[in-house]
Length: 229
Image (cartoon, rainbow, N blue to C red):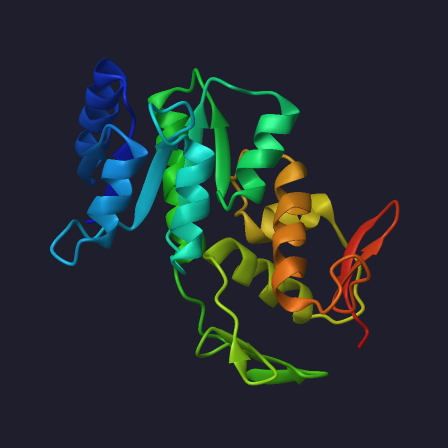
């Protein structure tokens, strides 16, 4: 039974979401502030949350900072940012903070639950291939590890899936729509900004010079490709 952590300060919204998710079979824990949520996740006796639904406008620490601090701990738990703020700059900021998805309120229970299912599917390990050496970037598809110059690089599920998808066909150009469909699942209701934000985060972790990427290259007017390296 997947366990979802709801981080939402509005009691009525939080209670309503908790009720809906429990009806769909999820275990649910809740937190009213970002500080409480981070404390819960750091507590060895706390809930074993598999995904967080994170409000942006929280009292005290906002959702951006909560997500950044969570990623700084090395957590790869999927995070869905749920907020009434739908400006492009907010969406980009949220994705760059490490959110796997960004959903603008109002949203129906069915759509939110679909986004949760999609995020959990993306987090499931894929064990269909073997390890590879791409000019010093070691990708173990069975063990789902990425190592560069002896250092293991921790990637959240979406970034790992993006790297696995691109590196599976070096030099092949993928459009943003193709990547959105293959990495974010066929029924995902997202847009291409998710791809650009994830590529930016991935480059920051695997490239020596993210502004002059060697591995994840932009093909202007078409999309992205891995190498050739």
